Each structure stands twice: as structure tokens, then as C-alpha cells.
Image (cartoon, rainbow, N blue to C red; front, side, top):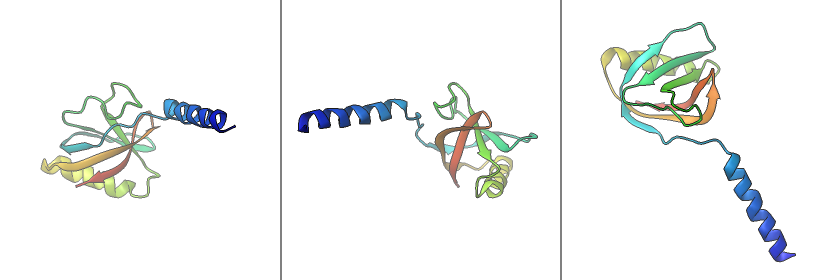
Length: 110
């Protein structure tokens, strides 16, 4: 029972890893190149020099913040401020999920 149970447990772990969403590493020291205002349930933006926001949406540079995010309005205000001043964001982290068709943002550090 020991070897069979261990083999089944290992197979289960590997199958979970294989189907888990790909998560991009955080993006560091980037400026905001575009903030899009659209009739949508999300706020959208792009970072300078980022060709793929998260592998969950292949080859898309767009990030999305769901308006249901607890800090959505604050993050949107931060994006507008950073864009208009030319300042740099310290870190942008995605969740590995898709929201409004683009990479979902969890955290932005300024």
C-alpha cells in the first residue's frame, strides 16, 4: 500500500501542476504607456516594454483591473497619476487569471 499510495499521490500532484494557470513574474520598474477608458467592468492599461502581461493571455500586453477589485478606484487613480507624471511603478503583479479578456492585476506598488 505504501508504494502504490505514494505513486498515486505524486501523480495527483503532477496533474495539478500541469493544469494550474501560468503566472508571470512581477513586472518591475515600468512606466505606464496607455490607460484605456472604456465602457467595461474593468480598467485597462499597458506598461512600457511589456509584450506579454501574463502568459494566461498569450502575446497580449494589456493588464486589467476588475472594477470589483477592493482597491479598483485607488489603483485606477494611481495609474492616471503615474501616466501623467511619467513616474515609474515599482511592481505590477498579476493573478494568473483572465478578467475582461486580459491579465488580471492583483497588486500595484508605487
